[in-house]
Image 1: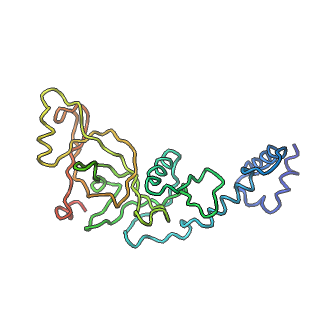
Image 2: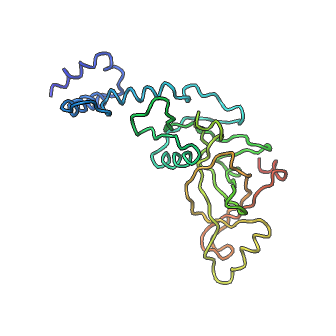
Image 3: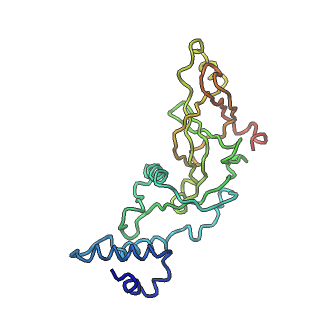
Length: 251
């Protein structure tokens, strides 16, 4: 292989690639597709054209802070594949037209969920409350079924550009489940806690996504050690904060 000679064919494009291996990949891709008859959808130039078109219309390039929410300490975040797939699944429940950015080519005008998001440390929410990744404002609760609630711990506060216009920012959370399998003699604990609207939660999480518009409120919580209330592992006692009570204390 005459690598220097073939690299020279890139001309001015040779100076914009990030590293030499990137140019070599282009050469190998060309060798791979030279023997193909007809049109290939996955040549280097076709993929480059698709990505450039997405880059041009990417609202993140000129994303202004939301006027509805007040954010702090923003930074750009690239979602890993697992998080991206979960987020896409969450958004497609209400926006089925969204497409995976990796599945090229995209039809003209299609809605594509990109792998970039703007991450915030906290945002000012309604009733003067703040949502944060840090204690004590990192526990929220949402509706679960018709009469129950579910608590969740905030991992990331994400703003996704044009796909969150109607729903507001998206929270990446650890969904927390109630404690089960208590020791013998503690069977009546749950009914007692329910009288005080307390939830005894496990520290075993399931990663999920929640729209800010779905949040009912913040949760006051206390970390408790193992063997509390007949549960063998460390856990959390959580209480839903009413919007008119305790705002200053937990702000």
